[in-house]
Image (cartoon, rainbow, N blue to C red; front, top):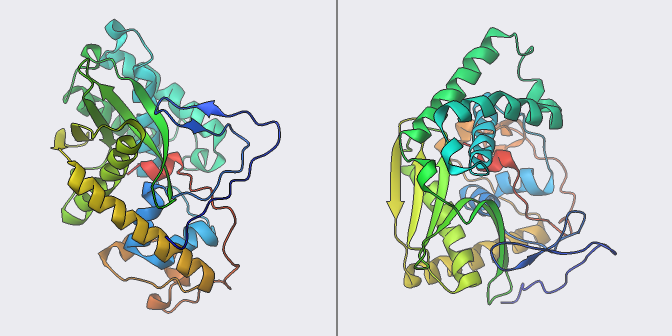
Length: 309
């Protein structure tokens, strides 16, 4: 494709790290070449102006308590699978919850600012709601019977077009026969049509990356909705992932075109109700900041909040 990016800039003396997915992933401190993550691809698909606000303008977004709760629950589930199988019990998960919050709040000032302190009654209620999500997880599966290949796995793959894909997989299960299952934890309720399409877009992204890395189409994509204890399973095939690959190529081409011209147009929808940037959106009488030009390189990284819901 015409917009193929083939230059990669690295910082001297920064050693690469091998990911479990099979591709060498640059170590921390490396300036990575432009890449597309599932969250940012979904942003552009939903609303090009939202993509600009997040990636180009980098407008601040205050995390919600629900997002941070999702981040904390993900951290607990990741740590749970580092324990011996016999210790992966609901009571042990509950013990991990407060330390996980304290660690994340210590790392992110904006997290700590969501509550007046650990004596805040609203914090107690929030922590209890996180515990209920963990109970919801144990209502869906028994982690003592599982041995994932990886949790919070960073994967990268370059498509034949030159587009670099990058994302984090909550959990990767690989059967002795080699069959792959991709598992994603959702801390919100099972979605309606729009939310389900967005979640499936994310899972197809991971399936495509794994197919390109390993030459194997995942046998199952599993979405686990902890709030209402529902699990949705989907089985992709090569033809579908090939079509999805063309979709991502088209999205990346459109992103680069908009980046050159600054023409990131709003796309009004019901999701506007949840946008932090209405004040800057022409659809709501706002004016975007002056276009600063395309950032080079765009690291294409996802934060834990990107993956929370």
